[in-house]
Length: 472
Image 1 (cartoon, helix red, strand yellow):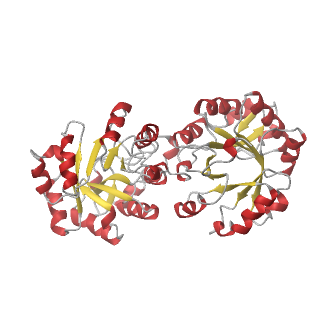
Image 2: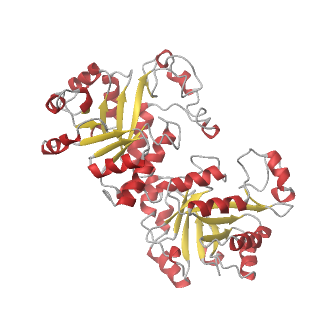
């Protein structure tokens, strides 16, 4: 049995690619899944009338025409430029990105051609699956060398329906606690039949935390980074500047999801106040750069801001992405059990603190602001508030640690890092902030051993830590 079929932890199978962050079944979604640590890509495959294999989930186009009744040219003329890529294109990308392919074969007539194309390309890491037993029977009759999976819907006996298959793929994503059915007796039966298990696409962090401990081959997810969070394997805390702003639009829930799902400890957000005294997450004082609106944020009510897109500027996929409130971000961080770094822009200290307290997140948030008075207000409001001070704003380290009793001190590349031992002696954590992507600089930061890092490239930094064995 190939080694990849006996992984030490569940394989991360990106459901139609990283479909939480890009249009499903597109080359972009598959490439993004590789960036997020996916081991395999689940790909929905059809055979066209002119014998082309394309990736597309539905059996019909939006106009009702069946995929199998159309030529590839017909399909290309009817879909977006990035939709319905050829399997040959996906194979080439998988080989370049060192990812496996989990083929969800939609129609039996596509099964053998898919297997033959994968064999011709020399693909070794592939699983061929289908709901339709006819597809599995055709593959078995053709002596396909790849593991075969039967996709099992809710209410169907997985063992009766998967006779002869190598893998039971449970599609139980619509159940509240499906993991309760994955008990010792279930896996004992799997051992008896010699079958492995792949699980439905899961995006809930609490369920995933349970599922990843099960003895399964793999777990599908729209958020492939959630299956095996890379941040859990890094000792220092990684603060994601405005979220995963290279994957999703900055300061949005999608950008925060990507960080928290990957196991990073903090998301840095910027908070502004609206005309009706509500708190929203947006970096600029104006709407022009990152939304479909114009003018000052403080001139608009929350209701008006809710009608704007916070993601259309980034990619068409994010056209429906709203401007989040501070409450939205606090809820998300709490759901994942993670933390926030809140930079107060126009937001008043009292209003921000009140929301943090309402969510019982006082110990999971630290604060900073360019406005000194805002920091002074926070300290006057509560001795509990965790404030950050920037070393660059003070003539001496003593001045920095004497100002408002900071809970941590931030350093840039230009600051004197020889302060670190003294700060540690005082029990004050150190954070290094870097907004660039130079791999040598990221390696230098990792080797410096700060307690936290504030980065625009958290995934690249995590990979450097893994490769160098730094803080792992």
